[in-house]
Image 1 (cartoon, rainbow, N blue to C red):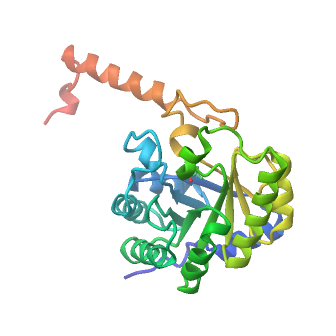
Image 2 (cartoon, rainbow, N blue to C red):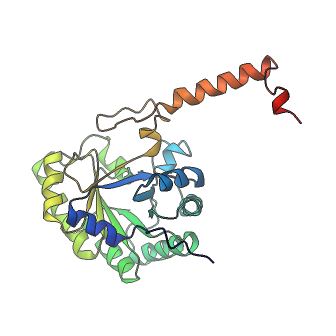
Image 3 (cartoon, rainbow, N blue to C red):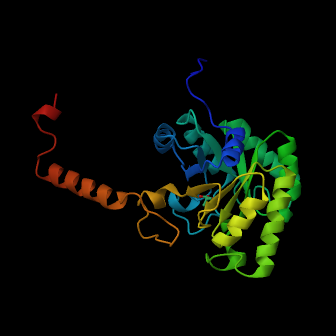
Length: 271
Ligand code: KIV
């Protein structure tokens, strides 16, 4: 296999150095080869194969239905398109909760079968043993606190989390537990910016925010949301960089019109 020595691959050490140097980390989700290739070529540092694939790729209402096999399929496709970015894969619902042996087995399957560089797991104190076990097998783990979508039926809503003192205190404690258990970073989802700032300053590992304000060490968004593919979803935290839904629908409507009017294909487009 030939290795391109020009490419400086992003590693968990790179992210650690970026935090130390005050350089912000950019992360987006991707679920397939073509988008992963574009994001990698654009210079993104981290690609998350998120279990949000359950929503945006499979059309489920929540992230709960996606399986370990389906996450592995998405991760394999992303890895084929990536040469520089760090690729992190979500452990899906049911593949780790309540049993650190099962968590380790799921983690090993993803690492062995996809070639991904690390994993992300939702939760705090309750997953400490699993994080330690996975990290001790040499697998980099990213935590995920705040709004953890796999617990949506416990929360009841997708509203901002940890606005009350008790939940904020638990989140701060959980962040330190994850760091001490060996996590190389932690996603903070939909929490007040002031709390994210406190957590970011209390940790030596990077925090990556989504709806957690500008003090985090990096930011992550779901690609379908920021590219405007999923144009009905407009939460306050989202910045939409394109309106791809309109562009794609317009292009498809033009194609339909061209086919029906016999404009496509023309002579130059024929053999
Ligand atoms: O699955 C996902 O897309 C995520 C991000 C929202 C962080 O976990």
